Length: 567
Image (cartoon, rainbow, N blue to C red):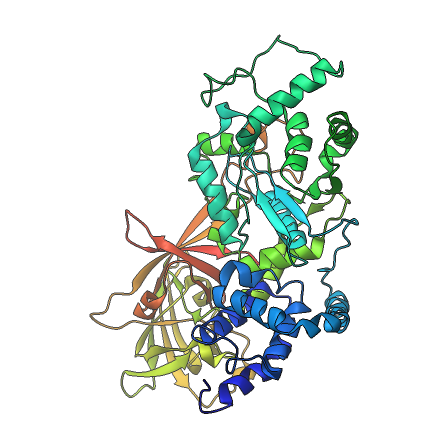
């Protein structure tokens, strides 16, 4: 069956080059579109593959970043991909050409500052990695590096697998809440494990191997401190240590590459000895450095204390370095992935600046964030505007450089609101620019002599004036009789920790920042009501903010400031 037109097939052939992107969000969007196209089709155009199929298949096959996505998110693309390969055996002879294509893409990524091509230790067959979180807290930015690197390496070549193995060997610290949150946060990052086993699945195997070690004279029983816990208490009176659990489960679970932070480097010899002593298959270890950030603590135990002491609202507080916390602050999945993969599995221990990560994020949100005007209500000034014949309205772009973002209705009236901070700088007969409207002259200024606060202003429009010649460009908001402006609460946050690096011997409570949030009350016209929770906007002259929801007491719209490289 054909569409009756080659238009659809031609469209995909022309888009083949787009599949060479290394941007996860771009690739997922492309593959989702292709998935819809293939919903009722065996191939792109008909019952047999043709040049259109080969072009798209080759682009995906030659891009390490694209290959893992279909099997996780696009069922129809995964089915089509296998059909193309199975129905055309001669494609195998073309793999060398596709590999050259992939190499060119890596070189291009390298020249732009990316490092998606990370050298792997030599392994036979598909790569199987594991991400082994302990369900004793929420995932943080450090875990993101481990999860994304494991996911990247596992799916860099066809046939690989990512195992998310819950290390449930410490029942006193674990909870179902944390386990559910880990799986949820992995999904937020676009990481979908192929398998989700538990360490406890292997308790019998580990118990028998322990007995084997003891009988061989390579271990002895120390009963001075028995493990405790509610889970399986009647069956198991002891629990395995990490240093025994990791080498056994990695080998027994089919892991071929154990990626772990270099804090375990000194225990690698023990890991390898354990596998030799038990006659288990050896697993290659690759160490990488933890991703530490200035003025940030990543210990789950210490983060738990901060939550327990109510220093924050919870594990998902925007001040917390948890995955959910930084995403609530305005971090995007694409920025996280790009930043982590550009770091690579380096062994260099660094204390990174948060600004470097937020700078990557800004490049993603800036082209798509709609622009609005929010006016600080602290001593707001009413200003009479002369020269306007009558109240009027007009549709204005939400983004001057991206028409696709849409438009909003802007109202022009004879009375406007301006911020006290701007009004204090005005001089009589000075020409200023009202952003989004035009120029105006300041004709009179009323001040409170005691405080110096401006109480009222008079302006006269000068729409023929040149905005390039004015020094002051100010934001404003129309004051419309009978229309109440929308109340906003703009939150600004500080770091939780006062020191760049909190040493192990430092007292946590002594290193906490006393005040870490400031709330500014502002107003905006009703156009802001179109914004949905989770959307990031830019308030002119104030920066980027993410809409979190409504304050349960005041009913105001709550916006959290999104940092950039400058803040």
